Length: 184
Ligand SMILES: O=c1ccn([C@H]2C[C@H](O)[C@@H](COP(=O)(O)O)O2)c(=O)[nH]1
Ligand SMILES: [Zn+2]
Image (cartoon, rainbow, N blue to C red):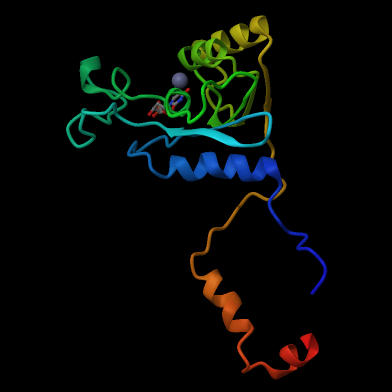
């Protein structure tokens, strides 16, 4: 077998899938958001998802969207995926990096993105495009020269199958003689 695989993940799919995998850690029952920061050498330097701050139990702080009192909702407490990805960085800084994120950043995250030196944002969903926060975020990105574009994946799904590593071994067992003799 000399030929390389052709159906490997593209870089963009790989980084966006990393953001989506991180989102699977979120306890938010409505919106799970993940973010992945990549440097100019295509190295991942930070990953994050939306969640309660350290020391604020996600069993005790609220996950509601609407309550009579704002203190009963998640909005005053939850750390956004973009903020966590920046704070989780494993490099000195995130200057000139690209952020892959499931949802277009809000205005507060846009400020953090700009101030941290990230130059490009690749997002999947713009479902809050009508919101003032999103409009403000785009105004700031445009003014600060942060590029942003929506990622439309070629394949809607990236499947992670924990059993496939064993399955690949199985196909090479001597019980399939035709295959093994072909290879010899
Ligand atoms: O830029 C953003 C905007 C929002 N989030 C998180 C914060 C919340 O946990 C949800 C939004 O909740 P909705 O139920 O969709 O109102 O998404 C984020 O991580 N980054
Ligand atoms: Zn935000």
